[in-house]
Image (cartoon, rainbow, N blue to C red):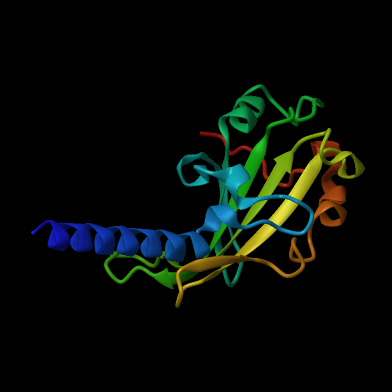
Length: 177
């Protein structure tokens, strides 16, 4: 009986470890882009407050920010001429849209997740880009996994954000509520 218990316990442990290793291989929080910005720096972004939403012909987007950045927005940054503090983080979540078949009017809602973009301010870590770092992670629905975008920033990072240098390099304005 003890032999069966030990065998069962060993098999259970092996299955648990195998499952843990398999899931850690696809764990989004282990990913990092070449410039050092890691997905794990944004742990919990799914619950951050919405700053604003936007739409292109192809995508629906929600911009969410961590509490540090939300406090800065509420204090009037960047409109008051002050910069966002170090520790500010913003995430842009992008979905392919679909029409909501249940709505009694025409409305597009999120369908398939496309990717997430992250921006973090840390003046000590990223002095060459005025304190900002950028990352993009593409989502693959078939495997339910993320991967760093090969360019790291999808052709828009500091150079793209330099257009809004007067707004401390952030395009997204805090929408009135």
